[in-house]
Length: 296
Length: 305
Image (cartoon, rainbow over all chains, first blue to last red; front, side, top):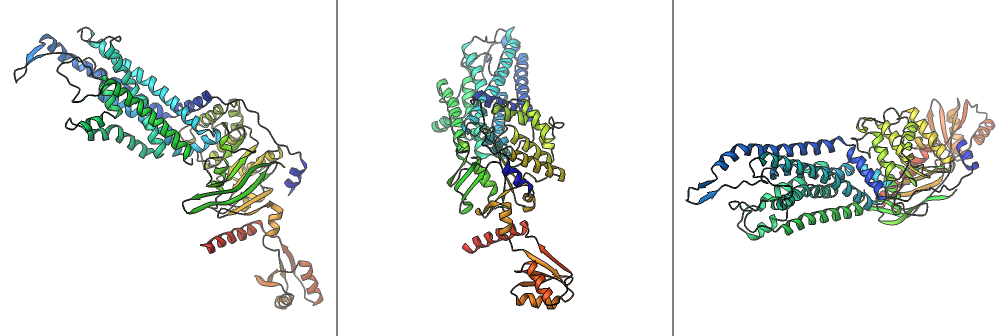
């Protein structure tokens, strides 16, 4: 019982902590350290980026052998008698849809990871005990996630675009970076990745479990849109336009090939940008609400 | 001693189950306060509510006069180790502590200092996933100390520690309390608290059972029994029963006597010419007091249903 006597004899005072004012950028640094210190982050992002660049460059490269033949004989007649003039679509291969889906998948996985990585391990309790202001933590996560995925996706889009155009440049069918369609396509090819990351974060915050979050976001981004295929019903097409992947492919569509169509009832560019922005807003708002309302 | 953590009618319900039931407790600075209760008695839920991680169904809890969740940053106010497993295994201890330190504008040299203090300086670069439970406990304690806070909360901090680790943690708690800090430590084992805490808050089924010093708690537990041994045990037993004591055999010709002090037993034996081979007061065990009190609480609630 010696401890009782010692404690009651010693002067007991209320300690008042001195604290520098809180800054948002400190939370961004915290989230950056967390993201950057996980091997899985870099593995997913670098694997997705390399695969995307490879698919795009390889796609343009394999075009080359057909390109020279088609350019030599640019006019033909289809079996039903129509005259057909060859036009090379410079965006279809260099910013291909299948490749960006890998980036979307990588972004969504990282986005989901930033949430389920905390909730499924219990790390979130350590985080919130250090930073009780949950809204700021979520906002910092959004900031770091968007910055990371946007930079990476932009680099991937630029390498894919410039590399692809360089390969076809000698055939004079490439696009310049100053081309309006090219700029819109590059912007969409870039921005769809952080949007998917935010959607992934939303699913991670809602579901909190690793496997279930990933399955849900993959199903949402890539499987559910498949249910809205075809051009038979106007409302089905309208619903299809609401998915991020569809908005991206609409914005990267090159409109100068008279023999290619963007489907019946195509969405306007404005509509597609609004869809992407809408998903960002919905994801951030929902993540903020559920993280603040639910017990950690 | 300044009241630091104040729980007022704190209640948490999960569906129709009440995990914490109108708990009103004040935890003061300058002492180690033990927070005891059987498994599932609501200790962890209470600690989580103190930290604002779980929202109370009703009632309130403040730390230093303010709800903890209302503070923008926490590490300089409260250091907490809730569960050593509440950590992402993919990072190194250094990355983990660095991320916490930068969020609260704590100088990064503290990371090295606390790692040194808990004995993890050598393994700080390794991934936490490979740590033993004891190492994770040490890392959790390091994180709690990072902001040099005046209030420290520990949930079952002795789990997984070796005897040397247990001794180290106990000494650290007492040192932190002597520095004027509030140290609130939960456990489901009385024996762990016996040499650690000066005050006890005991709960069972979410309700407060006791909030007092260790000494007071020991006193209110089971009454002291006296062990007495005599060759003529049967005769002595009859004599003591006649005096109003409860007697039961303790084996080897011994008797456990409840309700008479040792001095009175000795006097009775001497007057009746009974030779005593042994006469010893059994100290009321804290563990026993704890078991009895919490068993009552369980019974009480069960009778309610």
